[in-house]
Image 1 (cartoon, rainbow, N blue to C red):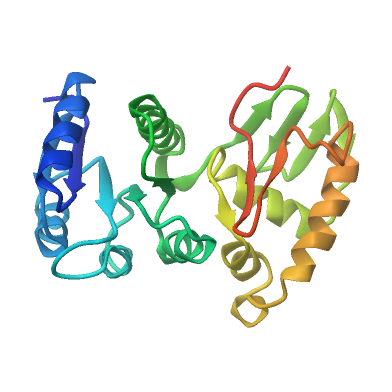
Image 2 (cartoon, rainbow, N blue to C red):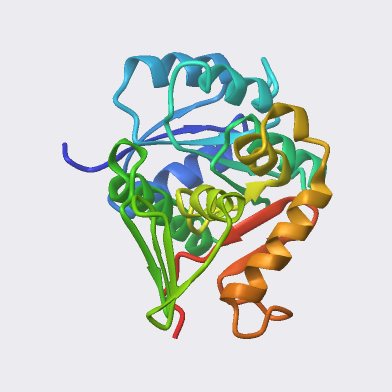
Length: 232
């Protein structure tokens, strides 16, 4: 009973069965449903560790499922969808999804994303993480200090706030809108040029080669992420 419980919401019965069998084979408990409402009810009644959600559901769009869940729960959400437009991906992430995989995808990739998201939730109890470390980059969140090769790097308050948001979602893309809203406020969500300027400044301070970043990565048309891998 200590195995994580995954809820799967997928309306294709064959794919739902295949995915359920795969996840159970990876030592997860799985509850599978065909509709968004069933998924919503299950999340609210079960101690759910992670939700895997298709967007094309028969009773409601998956985007609406995400919006409803985010009004009352922080359960991690991975979207699986054939929709591969940047606008669909961005909308899902802005609504509160944690990750997005487009169909078709490999089983290994899905399991890797699930493991990474569960690790992140376990590593950041209550949403706090004291120190981020990847290769030569170290960020001390509580002390608001940044080091590269053990040398302290001076960053502005805005630059540190950007790093703070990215570190709290390490390994996962944070959309332009999310970064602008969290760092500058809701009235700045259309000012994406702010991000280009400040991310450029941060890369020049942190990256050995700003044109080929190792830590602060761009997800074209969607947002940015900071690597959660040990970069050597």
